[in-house]
Image 1 (tube, rainbow, N blue to C red):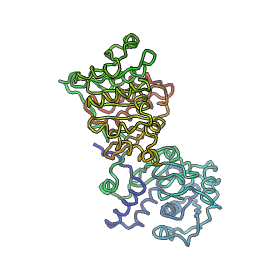
Image 2: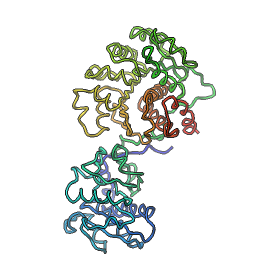
Image 3: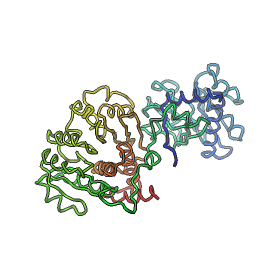
Length: 495
């Protein structure tokens, strides 16, 4: 089976570079390999003999640009190279790469971007630590305004490698070629939108080095969790596949629970029951067939239902209501130590009261699925969790604080476990931005946990399957469509 895709932060990647050099690979050789990869990628975007403008910065990224420029010129491309700063100020491997360039080195301000068939952006890489200004900002503005395709080296200049944030202004690349591993900025917004498709070039830094220097951050995909996905055998029966319980809101707020319940059933939970307030029993009964129904009058009713140990997975939150009663139901679920998914109202009911959840989920598999607004409300007053610029770090700190897996939703969903593992979802789609989509995601995760998939893997698999189903449907998607798309995704995964 393919190994999970590692994602390395800029600092981890620098350590991996140093470790590779310690094995005997000279730094200039790593730079030449990177430059060859850039040139090969450029050849796919520009016909032989085309005009290529290379924008080189004063550091290692610029050195990669010099190598690529030298190779492309030797292959007959008409290459113009502009440098930010003076050639005399280049140092180390970048200076060695510049010596191999036989052409003119122009000031970056003089590069004729409008005449180029392709622009190679080798201005700044993962070492950028401040907003672009002055000549650098002007160069990026001119590149973006040229209307020419841009190939970014390592990452689009102006993007923060660790957070994906725009540092003042950033290149809008058609394509990016990076080295050894993707960086967080290639998956986190808005960096993902600036990067275009990202090609990962092998420059000879082995996976064992990457895993030693990183190893806890992944791009979310099947390689990360496919081995945990349930595969029913010939002798399997529904009771082996778990029983998911979904708590419903009142008579006018029942749809969210049914969306979650249907998703849990489609993902393979052997049985699914909606726990309904007495006033909503008739509404829910009119819409449910394969999904069962139980009366549940608040926290006391939930406590009574959970005396039956066969209910091994629980969804609380969708349209449940923002009030003390919802908090009490969460407390009942935590005490029962069942697999638990908390969303929406189950999170907002704890607005400013996150201290009540400190360490609450260390004794049973739990997944919290907030979007940014819910996350901010839940952890109000906890600056240590809310202040980091990195979405990955915020999710990790929340997971460590609560003891549960945190799935921080968005176009760049991040899933973090209390042990520090984290994954960035790589297949998000704007078609999931529709009412009820998050309720369906809850059901997918709970249905997997009912089948004894560990919480982190269940959250990662649920998010990826959710994204794949949404992308497969495309325009016009509504949440009611999602559960029925899941079997097709599962078929492809388990084939």
